[in-house]
Image 1 (cartoon, rainbow, N blue to C red):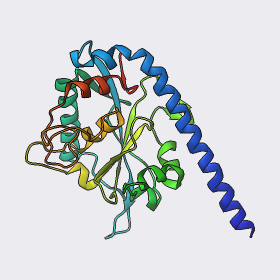
Image 2 (cartoon, rainbow, N blue to C red):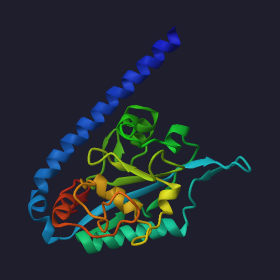
Image 3 (tube, rainbow, N blue to C red):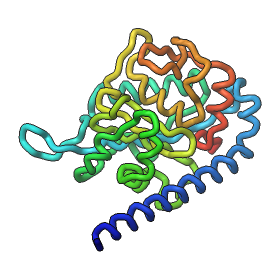
Length: 248
C-alpha cells in the first residue's frame, strides 16, 4: 500500500513539474514573440542575420556483444557531421541564420546509461505529448542545455538527443513549447533521393514553429525522407520568429 502511494505521489509531482515547464516555456514564447514581431511579419526578407544555438547529446546504451556502455552513435560518425553540415547550410541559405554550438563543440556524449524509456521513446500519435508526463520527459528536461529548472541562457538553445530508436519515427519534436528534439540512430543515417541527413534539420524546423502542413515533397517540412530543402515565405516568417532564433 505504501509503495503504491509513493508511486502515485511521484506521478502527480512529475505531472505538476511538466505543467510548470510548459507554462514557463509558453510565457517565454509569448514574450519573445514581442521581440521577434518584425520577423513574424517580414521574415521572408531574411534580414537581418540571426543565430540558433544547438547542442547534440548522444545517449549511451549497453553493447549486446561485450556488455560495455557505449554511445548509440559514435561522436565522430561521418553521418552525424553531415547532419550538422546540412543544418548549417540550410539555415544559412534558406533563413539567413547562423548555427552555432552551445559549448565548444556541438556534440557531447551523456555519461552513464540512460533509462530504457529514454533510449527508446515513442512518437506515435498522442504518445509524443504523453511522454512529457513520464520518466523520459523528466529525464530529457533535466539534461536539456540552457536549463536548470529555469532558463539560464538567453540564447534558448535546442538540444538534440540522439537515442537508440524511436517507435513510429526516426525523429520527433513536440514543437515550440519544448527545448529538445529526439533523433534515432537511423535518423542520423537517413538519406533520401533529394536530400541526405535531413532529419536533424527537419526536427529543428518543428521546434521553431514549422508544421507538416501545406507543403510539397520538395519542401524541408515534408514528412518523409524524400523531402527537399525548399521553404515557403511564410515558413521563413515563422522560423525566424521562434524564440530559439535570436539576434544575439
